[in-house]
Image (cartoon, rainbow, N blue to C red; front, side, top):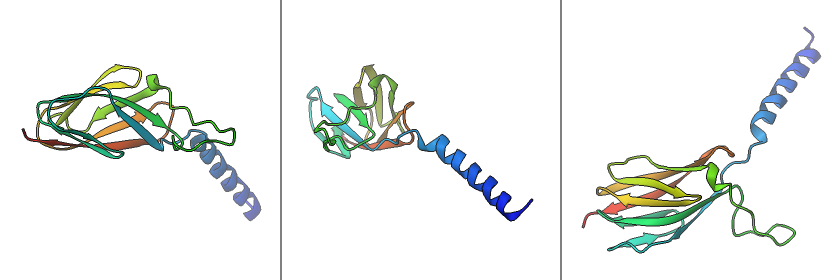
Length: 138
């Protein structure tokens, strides 16, 4: 095979692989809003929250493929990823458990002291976002 033909085949293969992964946007940001006030401490920030062991909190968690605070050229804020396609799980249920209620609404219970990550992913996007949870003893 000639050099030019080899280069063309390689370029086409690379282009096809980029197309297959490049069409799906990546998760870029989360918004986390507290819906309930748990007893004890519940500090919720942009990248992590703190709960007291034995408590739980209701949260609205929305995932975005663009910064949710930046307006587009029409002045509109981006829409979140369809909440029915988003999944939130705990990477250590002995510290915190996640229960899905409905469209973007979750209950997180603090089952034991330690640090854990909530893992947020979607069937509509590439990648995932970790949201840290620190559970402190009562």
